[in-house]
Image 1: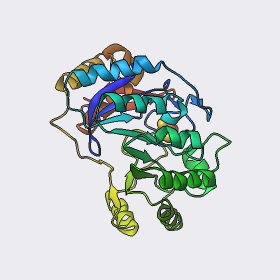
Image 2 (image 1 turned 45 degrees about the horizontal axis):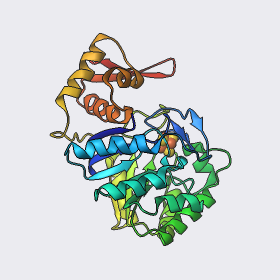
Image 3 (image 1 turned 180 degrees about the vertical axis):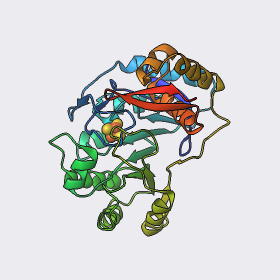
Image 4 (image 1 turned 90 degrees about the vertical axis):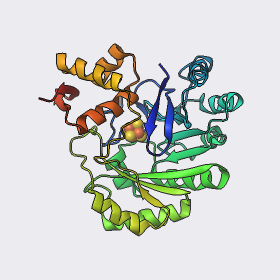
Length: 306
Ligand code: SF4
């Protein structure tokens, strides 16, 4: 299953998710990752899945006439690790005028081949949480070959070459990258990168590590003011986007967790839905207090909340 949604997204409207990697294939292992720990930590790009099969699934959803505001590459890890990305974007552009977005962790942008692969996208949302190697290592637990200075250089080069929009995302974890000196340094680096927007986020979903704690809305607001007019807070906190949520899927999750505690993988197999889509729904249900999350032997289970 390579396609999920369209799922409602505050930033992208109705976003059709495209996942081109095996689950949790990433160059990082961020302490806040909502997908859990990285199973395959790699910087090696390769072809994972058949391009025609992925395109076929995208075509079917477009043909169904559902509203799609963006076709978004994200999913189970770092999309630029797939060598099919550039080709897929080119092929999508031949069949539809729906804009294409790519969410990336920025780590491979120092490679020309990766910048070229992204060149036809309409929007790229790269993330950058740290500007010192020490904080990068602690927060993002990178593949050992990755150096934050190269990543920043890659972002600056990408900005110079790319004609689409860049929304730089920074996620803050309390006590890790929120010190005044780090925020000051981030501001300077962001000025060098010159993105179109700066999106500020924090830990709002169950993280890979319990120790990854969020900033408060007030703390994020203070940083937003400091970063200036391009910055906005995108963390959703307690706001639940209703109206665009499938009640059937919510009910199916509730009926599953009523029987026994289940993992995201259990739900995905049983309901035939992508984990990223299910995470959104579990998020709604957690915030509504209808389910709860428990960790058992390092695994996350969703249970019914009495
Ligand atoms: S948050 Fe993104 S970049 Fe970080 S480990 Fe998870 S998938 Fe990889």
